[in-house]
Length: 172
Image (cartoon, rainbow, N blue to C red; front, side):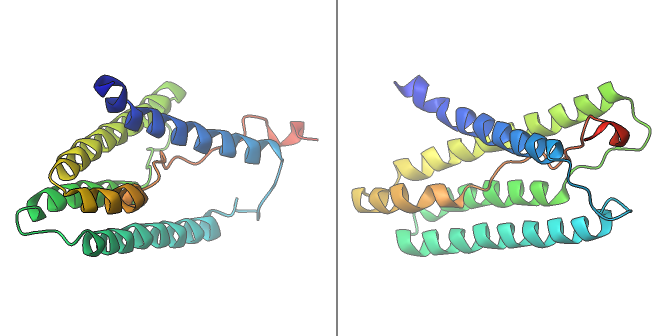
């Protein structure tokens, strides 16, 4: 049972990644087109605003959960370790994905896989820090953590834009 619980964060991360990929594929298949420049300028600004908003929401949630847990001085280091892992992942997610122009398809795919692998490792480290924090909480605090702590976990996304595989002239 303990081993099964250990893999739950991994399953969650994989499910989130699959959902993000599927959403991108559905969007690509709808044939929506943007402005002549591909909407890169506007899309980047929207992505930055959404990312900042999501990051701000998670940081706000962290502050709220810390307050709601009413941590003791002895519990503070475990919380700080957890919070540090979350903020580190948020920082990584806000950097997005930068692929050098002209890289081969295989190199681009390998780079994305490496990014997702690194983020999965970060999620596993968050799960470990959460387990250590949770183990040090009182029963009342655990009830609060059960309700609020999952909301401090940022959505995991590779940051790589999805592109349609169909050439523009071939779309209906």
